[in-house]
Image (cartoon, rainbow, N blue to C red; front, top):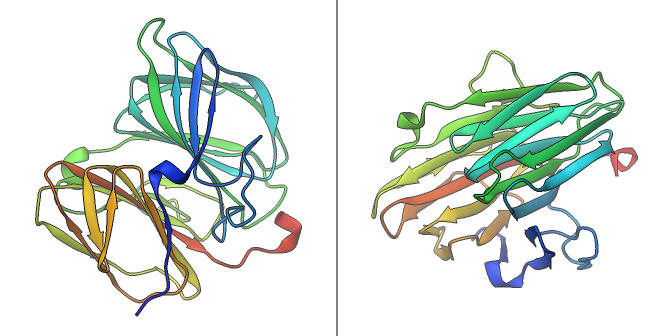
Length: 244
């Protein structure tokens, strides 16, 4: 039997103000849980809703891989390197902050909220040149199968990331199944249910539940209802302390 860690949606941290509602799987800002600092190289998994016209003003980051996955609405990115872009559902954005970058992420719609996942991954190499990439996915390839959306290699499908990490997403009808195996030895898997519900190795996960398996072989997933969407993060479990 595989060892696993389950993070139920209702157990996450929550921060809210007049324009932001943020659910945090791992310790972040004022939310601190000693057993939820990270899962291997996965440091932050925030489920954010930002009011129309509002957002995160310009602020700095360095030596972190930041992935944004819109779920609803439109998110506008700007940074001090001259990159600008708007991402919507079906798009993926990856920012390698490396030696340092100032950026803002703001709701591009003045009225409708934007909902998105913000994910931080510790990098493989420190102090690299910052880079920004966004792509639009062909979501046909996510129907009842997993589509790779992030990879370490530019020649592979998805945005490139400065880490031995692979992300995949898929939307499944009830009873449809898939099988996933970590790409390299010593990587673990973290599953996050975006919509619907899944059976993963005998464990039922509902919308916004997460599950980590630090050491595993092939993992079977089964959708328990129609229009169930899952994100799988295949990530190193060992991170050099200098990256912490």
